[in-house]
Every structure is written in structure tokens, then in C-alpha cells.
Image 1 (cartoon, rainbow, N blue to C red):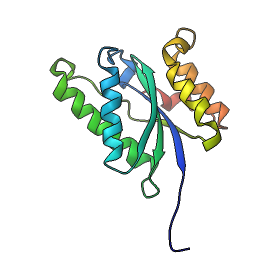
Image 2: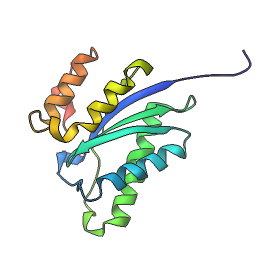
Image 3: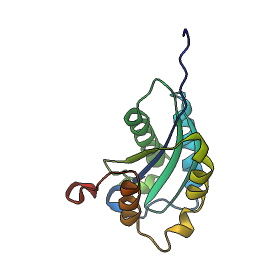
Length: 150
């Protein structure tokens, strides 16, 4: 086959360092727009985004020639730069070191989009840590509590 094709959708979750509540609802949508632009530079697409003051969820369609870690690194690095340049009062803003990423089949994209859109309501009853633990277990991964919460 002379061409290569790939449809790779991932749900990525990461928080601010120490889960500091620094993502202001006033500029949260601008952040997601910036993230979408960052992903476009590496031929990826932001399909949906959601979150609360201390973490974000991104539904990303990956290009076939970029790794999850490279895409997430680009998003975290460049969005941090944007936050520092746009909001000088947030000089201490940082993303946590790690992230969680889960595959999402084409047939489950609607479910994932709704989940991301409902984050504010969802986090009235579940903490970030409990959510990550649940998502990891749902995907067959066991949380390593000693090294998870930087």
C-alpha cells in the first residue's frame, strides 16, 4: 500500500502543578483555543476540551507521525509560555510533570466529548485524584500512588 492511514484519538488528562487552582474560567476557553492551535502546528486536532481550575481534559486526534508524549509535551510547553506571556501575574504557573492518556475509538467520540463538556458539573462530586484513579482502572491500569501526585 503506497499510502499510510491512521485514526488515533486520545483522551489526555493533566493538572496544574500541585493541582493549584490557576485556570480561570474567564480565560479557560482561550487556553483551549491556544491548545488547538498548538496541536495544528504538529498536524493534530483538538476535538474537544474541558476541565476545571486545576486540570484539563483534551480529546485529541493524533497525526500518524507524532507520539502521544511529543504532542503532550508541545501542548504543555507552548501553553505555559502563552499563559506566562498573556498573564504576567501567573509567573508561577506550571503544568504537572506527568499526564494520563487513553485511547478512544471512533465510535466512542461522542461519549468522550460529552464527558469533557460536563467537567464542571462532574467535579462537584469527584476530585481530580479520584477521577484519575477511576480512569486508570477503567483502562486496566493500576495507579502508583507513591509517584502519581507531583
